[in-house]
Amino acid sequence: MAERTLIVGGLVVDPARGVESVRDVLIVDGEIREVAAGLSKKSGLADAARVDAKGLWVIPGLVDMHVHLREPGRESDETIATGTAAAARGGVTTVLAMANTEPVTDSPSQLEFLRSKARVDAKVNVLFAGAVTVGQKGERLTEFARLRRAGAAALSDDGRPVMNAGLFRRALEYADDLGLLVIDHCEDLTLSGGACAHEGPQALRKGLKGAPWAAETVQVMRDIALSELTGARVHLAHLSAVSSIEAVRAAKKRGVRVTAEAAPHHFALSDDMIPGYDADWKMNPPLRPAEDRAALVAALADGTIDAVATDHAPHGCAAKSLGFDTAPFGVIGLETSLAASLTALYHTKALTKRELVRRMSTTPAALLGLKSKGTLAPGADADLAIVDPDAPWTPEAPFASKSRNSPFAGRRLKGRVLHTFVAGRAVVHAV
Ligand SMILES: [Zn+2]
Image 1 (spheres, helix red, strand yellow):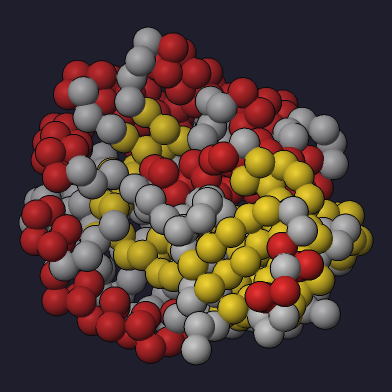
Image 2: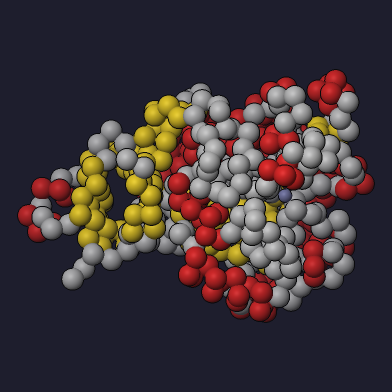
């Protein structure tokens, strides 16, 4: 007997097909079967499980292409099980896990181990990035073809930049031949070294060592030049500075194959908002002034920045209480990603609902080459979220994540995920 679910009366927002209207969605055996008005009145569907979505949005599940799941090596901070539970809570149905695990995910056997672990433990789809260099040491390229055969969905040394330009040029060329996306963490370590904040008045006032915006932009410009030189694709992680955005905007105008992402904390928060020396507000790149934040919002609106990605980076309370200068970089983000984005982008009228869903689902799915995700087209995987865009919500610990290092804890947001479906199965029912 086919497993059938009917989602009734929601506002379906599917940018890939230009759909934004009240429809019923029929799911059969894990796939979207039909999206149309009045399906709930069809007699043949009387036995389908029903979910009432009146007054809510029904959107393709979010695809977060920048997540740290900490397994293996730091299971006390997060695991595949808890990280994907956090994703499900946030309406995120596919994540790309970064390779800076312990040991680094730089070999086919490591990838095979992680993928088999995810098949058992994960509550949402998990893709894995392979490292660009062996041990993320920036010295020797990993074996890209073998990593791809073992299931690597992209390549990245994220957590660290690939500082050697000659090596990175070859990485772009080889990866492009294999159809693999290379994601770079843009940071010139000779400029940022040892800093914990954005170099500017706020860091000065607090007596913190700041990294200049140029630490990011120098490497953004280098990567653009290398993409232009080789004709290969490059994707820039967590852009945060006005100057980086301007460089990407100009490069795209010239036809350079560069894409970029931004994280909710960077476009929703700025460095003047950091309460005292609270390390739950410390991440890399750091929060910057309000002008940078505004530029990120504008860049998400005009498409200079292609995707929203959280850079979900769990750290335990002990590490985060070491003080702002010594605590590790990173904040969790999967559970608050949609609410923070709705609050900062949609409710401010910077982005339409369609543009928001495009940046959080459609485009990241396309960047990763996922043809049956990022849309509610018939035949697509039934990965979707049902959302109340107007519900007031103040996130608080405990989270589904094992960690609680969120700058959004205690902040009023507007928008909440009520149901999340992965392959037609409900993984979250918040009501
Ligand atoms: Zn990074």
